[in-house]
Length: 186
Image 1 (cartoon, one colour):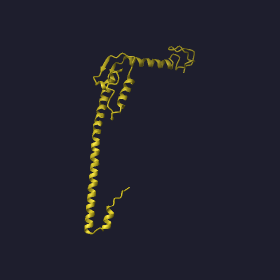
Image 2: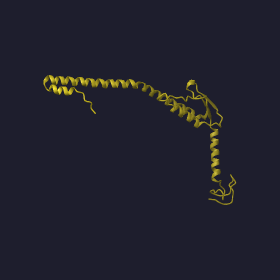
Image 3: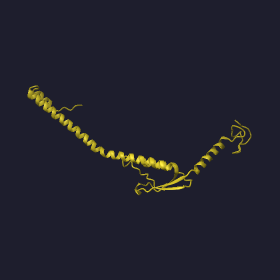
Image 4: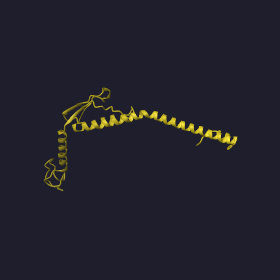
């Protein structure tokens, strides 16, 4: 580590104030600044698309569920870079009732297609779940009816057996009366 009097060529601070690896190198702060500048240059050279009217009112599993809409809004806001010029415009032709505000988001062009495919797939799955949920009450009603029928038929069968046993003398009238009394099982 160099900690001498020679100044850094980037910030003009001596090695005594800002140590660096060698006398001829830049200090760590200047190296980081150069890296940030390169990253900003790459960011500014990337193509951006102005996205407007994206359907952020995507369906949820329930009508009050806005999880997907909030996710898409968050993604667009996270990718949005207000400091660049958009080279493309994407104005989606969606139903006006499905549009979240009239915000324009400048997002990297390379993510537009994957995001569209991703949210289309999610929307398809959600709609399939909704359709399946529509059939659940009918399925539950049918299952309850099946169970009622089973219990009823078991009761009829048990009653026939009791009458048959009484007729054959296998049980007494007192035993028969005891079996007729319903006792709730716990």
